[in-house]
Length: 88
Image (cartoon, rainbow, N blue to C red; front, top):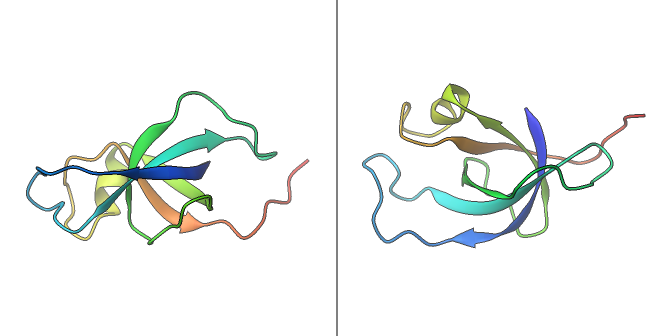
């Protein structure tokens, strides 16, 4: 699982079967202090995240399993809202 911040949304007029109604969001991975880590990417939204919100996301097979229709072609999925981080 990785921390990220929602930077915007992505509009896709054509989607693979099973992704109808799933929002796609532009997210920036972050470390525990909120500093950007790596490049921003597109993640499927499984939890109705909002712009500017800090979230947790998963990638790989776990991302596909987080969707309403399992095993859809997604590489990253937002799976939780972050209320706070208590880390050194």
